[in-house]
Length: 64
Image (tube, rainbow, N blue to C red):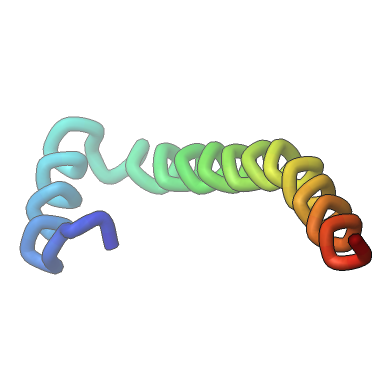
């Protein structure tokens, strides 16, 4: 995942825990997850028209 090793992820988690504290960490993780979900939805909304155009172009070029 993004070239990160498990030890790197543990280190990032510990630093986040020290900076934000145990009370705010679950809240931050939840908002981060929502942001990632919205980003995935937005990127799929942008790529879907391009894929449909590609399919149409492939269909048209195969009939010629």
